[in-house]
Image 1 (cartoon, rainbow, N blue to C red):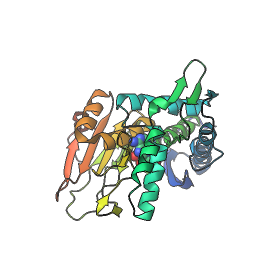
Image 2 (cartoon, rainbow, N blue to C red):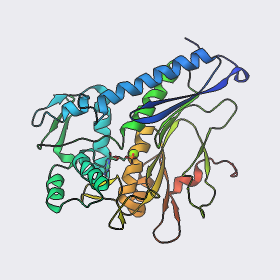
Image 3 (spheres, protein in one colour):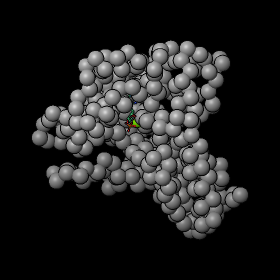
Image 4 (cartoon, rainbow, N blue to C red):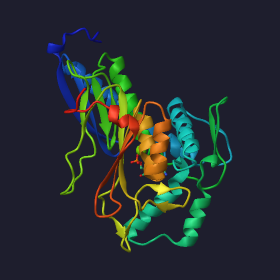
Amino acid sequence: MRAGAETWEEMRKFVFEKAEMGLPFRVSVYAADEAAAQAGAAAAFARIAELNAVMSDYDSDSELSRLARTTGRAVPVSPALWTVLTHAHLFAERSDGAFDITVGPLVSLWRRARRKQELPDAALLAEMRGRVGFKKLRLDAEHRTAELLAPDMRLDLGAIAKGFACDEALAVLKKRGLPRALVGGGGDMAVGDAPPDQPGWRIEVAPLDVPDAPPPQTVLLKNCGLATSGDIFQRVEISGQRYSHIVDPRTGIGLTDHSLVTIIAPDGMTADALSTTVSVLGPERGLKLIEETPGTAAHLVRQPGAKLEFRESARWRDVPKVGAAP
Ligand code: AMP
Ligand code: MG
């Protein structure tokens, strides 16, 4: 394994892409030779695949799916799943249940509604709401077990697992002597050390595919996570109303206040969870949560009327940007 002692001039950037977790994932890494970069990226992708086998809700054999079939029994969980479940619980508590990984039954219901172009039946909606609630998932820290307290629950890590997978893949690269790396998948990424001779990785924030959009900001990031959530311009309508794939667990309804939320946080998992949380909470309560969470910053785009509306948290102003005064 390489010690990473090369001079910067000798380093080159390598980019690899691979479908994992049903999404294109990308590893960008600076290395002295292609073989080291390639081996590093392969190990990083392998880690993501490993985590998918733990956390997928599509794979009925995943650890998560198996856990979902053990109602009323405390079952030991793997270290990776434990990390994600405990962090998810924390975000659920801090957001009064706006973020909730037990939202699975409602997510399925709204997926079906969008496919059929038909609002969910009220009785069915009420039944699904009864299966949801983060307090119905009991975590025992002493024994590292999880227990589902209600029947027919369904856990959905779609709002947190990708960010965690990016963090883990980045850690794999770092361990192999490749700390100048970035791992991204979907709207989530984990950023390592800066590229050689540069203050950070250049990331374009929320480029908007609409005619009157201002040019997007480009931030300069290192050693942190970034996530973007929302579907402001995704036109899936039922009876003239658009319902998001993000559901408010407290009402059971897919979000109709559409936004695009970008979060920068100390790691990818935190950014991922918070981007979904702020989408549910909306700008007022969402930005308050960000101000109260050390090391995090938020940028929001909404379209309440005809015009686009932009909001930022206080710490967003301190994020280094391309073209801004240092
Ligand atoms: P993201 O793209 O990170 O915002 O995650 C969205 C995904 O998270 C959805 O497709 C659902 O699988 C899941 N999800 C939806 N609503 C919630 C919620 N309120 N809390 C946690 N996860 C959610
Ligand atoms: Mg998320």
